[in-house]
Length: 455
Image 1 (cartoon, helix red, strand yellow):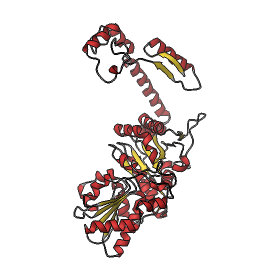
Image 2 (image 1 turned 120 degrees about the horizontal axis):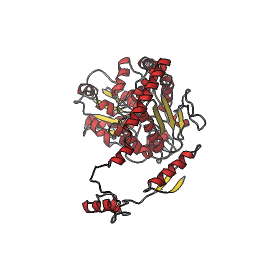
Image 3 (image 1 turned 90 degrees about the vertical axis):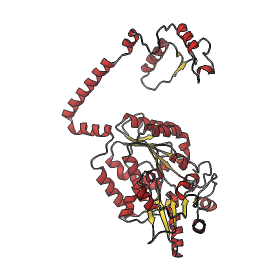
Image 4 (image 1 turned 135 degrees about the horizontal axis):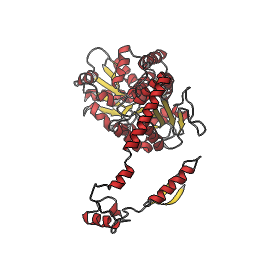
């Protein structure tokens, strides 16, 4: 650390930078001592120089105090000439381009690969490989936690994407974001593709944003969903910049269990959905997880949050048309002939619960449709005809089921519908006990559907 630098003295700053450059092993932290509003005779060192204009009179005094006689927006020729690097920059760019053309001549395939990665385009084989992986996942029909399904997706997609680079905030073993092709980035060898970020969720997320902005690499980073709170500013910046950062969040609900309410995510899913330009997926099984990862990797106009469960989730049987519909954000998972009397909408770990509740109701002669909606923002972007085919306007008896806060689901269930959710913090107990305590049971979902059908 280099301390005591006069932040208002260019020579002091230049000297500190030279000392930092001389440090060949470690990074340097330069601490510049400054005074807010420096140069202002009456407002220097006060809060008045922070959030309000100095005012014309004080600006005139500042100009006099620092000996700056030039009008606004006028840069003296000698200063402009010193800082103008247009010619130098053009010469550097021309030299780089000439070098790259020589490289292209010697290594044409590698040059094309470099250009592909820097452009953000996916490999030519991507679509075929991704389709093949999705077919394999569906055929395997595994019942696993979606965090495990996420790891399987990395195993399937990773070999096709040499630019993929991941990392976790000291939770790699829990997030399951390591895959067989992961190689750690270390101080001795920076050629790897997996970063152990340590417990620094904001720094991790901001670093991923920087990697995206550099280009040529496709980063993802991971922690528990509840800890997305620490990364909020970096998430918002990724969305504001519309960049392809991928944020993986596991242990996505009260299903976390014994770690208790401090670690059980309740409001995080809803608040992440509210970030403009942010896409969010909360898949219910291995197939939806494979689709969610694919959608995140193929998205070019914004970041994606992928939310995965700690606990095992039942595999959901689908036909080919239903599998294709997953990429539209919401689709009919279970249905019966004729117009449904009621619709249950669910995400993630609650989809299996919705299916079981609908099965009981249908066995009693009721017609209840189950809609799996892993991504509300993607569903909202579909055309009206598709959305109404999934959620017919005439069917007003609707129930949404998600282990999180309820207000954002009103837009889908309407004023006559209901939401089985949790508008309090969680409790410390085994996952199955916590779910039952908060009413995530077949009995309660059935009772809620019956109530809205008779309202």
